[in-house]
Length: 245
Image (cartoon, rainbow, N blue to C red; front, side, top):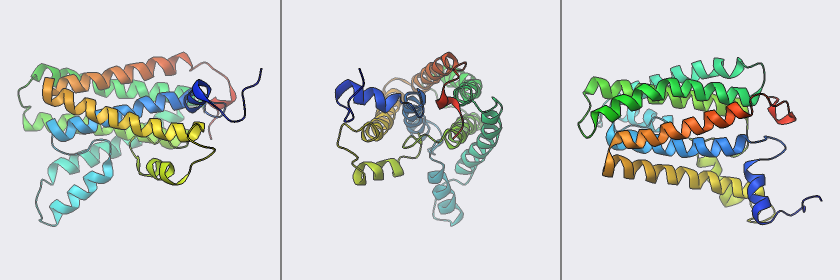
């Protein structure tokens, strides 16, 4: 029995997360969108008060500091540098699997784990105690590198409306493109992306303030592990969605 042309209910939600064009990639990218919210909230509240996912914000902070209008030059510069290095590494990583998008996600997840595990351990061991300034900068650089790799993956995958750390275009899509209605899978996908980011920000902020920064980063690590497990499960698939766009 074929699905209706106008999706409804659970079918529409499923199509928003898993479809013929991109397979299960949208579901994994929604999870990474939540991760972006978690780490940005944590870095702003508990680290060097800079973004690690939204690099544009750091460029603004850097410009303000260079203009002598206040703020640190070092912290945003370190975040931007870490992001650039992560993006360059990520660009090489995603092309290593030989054109398989599922393996690209798996390998970037492994790269992110390589950076996230030591960062999380350091911050968890610190507990409620402030990190040494040098340690904070190192954590900021590694988190930014992780997000740079993630954005290189997004650029490679080309899944519509799921940019994980850049919600401006997704929000514009919600406001201006209504598709066939609120149950249109692409409309739902945009809403899920925005919701995932907000949930990530709120969860990261609550954990960082009420529990400890390490708790927020532990949540981020759990999300990466989930994406790594999911991408590993589909890394041997040979369906049409695995081909580069």
